[in-house]
Length: 264
Image 1 (tube, rainbow, N blue to C red):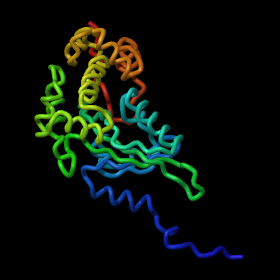
Image 2 (image 1 turned 120 degrees about the vertical axis):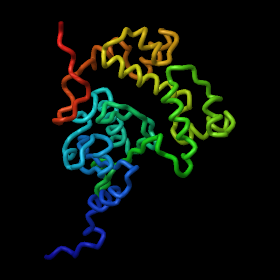
Image 3 (image 1 turned 45 degrees about the horizontal axis):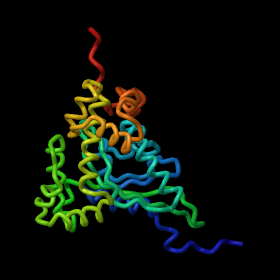
Image 4 (image 1 turned 60 degrees about the vertical axis):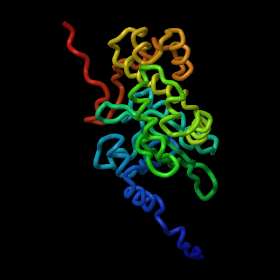
C-alpha cells in the first residue's frame, strides 16, 4: 500500500530556509548544532564575524574546540548540553567572544532545543549578538555602558556612573539591566575584569598579583575568590591549564595565540 502524500509542511527544507533568512541579518550570528555540539548550520555573519571565514561550510561538522580557546569552548559546550539535556532555553546569556584578530568582546547568546517529530531533542539552534552593537529597540541605551566598561574596567567603576550614561536612576538601570541580561551591572563589570585576567594568564607574561591589579582588582585575595567563583579554579591552575595550549584550534589559519619567542 502506498503511503499517504506528504503534507506541504513536510516538504519544506526548514534548515535551508532559516539559514538563508539569517544570512540577510548581518548583526545576528545564527548557528545550529547536533546532539554532539557539532555545527550543522551557520549564517554568513557567524562565519565571517566569529571565525573570519567567508566560506561558512568550513564550520560544518566541527565543534567550538576547533575554533576557540579551550576555556571558552568548554563553557559553550557545557551550555549546549544543558539545553539539550533539560529542554530549557538559555536567553540573552552574556558571554565572551574571541575573534580572529585575537581581540575579545562580550556578546549575548540565546540557545533553544530542536525537536524531531517524536518529540525527542536532536540538537539546538541559537544566535549571538554583539552587545556593543545593540543600539536599536529596547537595548539602544546599552551601547555607551558596554563601551565605558571596556575602556575603564581597570579603574574603579561605580554603578551610579553607569546609570548616568543611560539617563536612568540607579534602581531603574539595575532592574532593566538585570531583566535583559540576567545579571547585575556590577557582575558584568566583574566578568569583564575576569576576562582581562584570563587573557593575561593565558599569555603567561605577568605575575598574578600584577594581573589582578591591571584587571581592576585592588585586593589579591578578592581577585582569587572572584576568579575561582567565575572560572571554577584558582588563577594559578587556570594558567597551568591554558597557557599557550597547543591542542586548539585545529583549523589551519586560525591561530589563537602567537608562538612563544625562541629561548635565548
